[in-house]
Image (cartoon, rainbow, N blue to C red):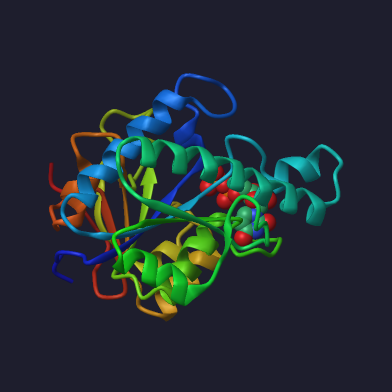
Length: 248
Ligand code: UDP
């Protein structure tokens, strides 16, 4: 698949992106940095929806390990994403971009309910839509929420922002000679244990509905902007590509 300019993008941002130098929670500096990256894409008239995770505050699986009922823990995780969404909304508006916050769990005092047609209208009017509480149901993660919302909002691509610039054949933090995958076929992403991209549920949903996925480092050299205009950064996962390493 050749890369193209995207008109409407879904960006999945893990909660850990908001931690900055801390070990837990939200660092306002990191949040503003992210908002500035969003701004650089926004200036190119790209319609943007963001699904924010909650891993910097609470994950359902960790809660379960600590002895909390899994379903309850998952709802706690969803609530964590709403806190992150509020922080991100604050930061994005501070850098001058209008936003709307929506939640898959009804919480009208702080966020609109997720309403598909309303979210699309916000983007058409130039507002960045921040989607919180994932899918609104337990036993899945915000990766699945991002895949689902990308499909229902007719996005051109699902983008997952990660710490390293794409998917590598070995952990790039440990092995300096590790190689980046330029492209990965969805079948390989789902079947091969050595290729960890995102949740299998999210991958299966994206593959079945032909939604391309891009994985890349958000806070680096205006990567988000480059990705949106189709430059070869990060890793593209699609049904139409072979799994190949980048030659660099
Ligand atoms: N969660 C859920 N349903 C969803 C989305 C999220 O139950 O549709 C819960 C789940 O417990 C998850 C937590 O919310 O661990 C935080 O989301 P996630 O782990 O995806 O955050 P990230 O890793 O992206 O920061």
